[in-house]
Structure formats: C-alpha cells, structure tokens
Length: 88
Image (cartoon, rainbow, N blue to C red):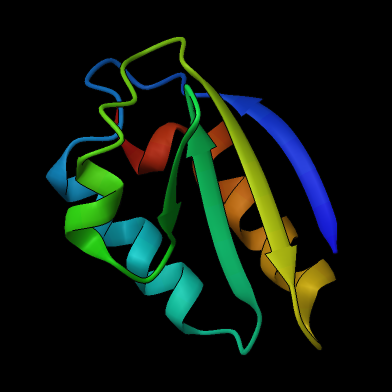
C-alpha cells in the first residue's frame, strides 16, 4: 500500500466537477484508491462518496492506494490534486 498526504488547493475544493475528474482518473487503474478527509473515507471511484467528504480549499487529504498499479495510480491522483483539478 502507498500513501500520501496532500492539500486541496483549488478555490472550490472537492466539488462535483473536481470529484468527477477524480473518479475518471481512479477508474483508469486496477488499484483501489481511498481518500480520507477528517476521518471520513471514500472510494475514489464513487462520485457521491467523494462529494460527501466536503473537502474544502486547504483541507488535508490522505490518499491510500493498494493494488498492482498503485505507483502509477498514486502519481496520477497526486498530479490531479496538485494541479487544482485543472481549474484556474
């Protein structure tokens, strides 16, 4: 299992459009991606669960990835979050 801690840096946090992008990225991999915010856990492939995390700007997100392509999956999720989900 690989883990990483990141901060949500985009202005609106993990809102529906950002969560949808995250689901798209997580679905490309075989590994299971789990995000943890304030003790609440969500599968990276479940849109509603991600939205329910209520991760606003500046929130710390713990990412746990387990599976055969966990390194690539963790890198892709990290890139998406650190790039602010592609939002200006």
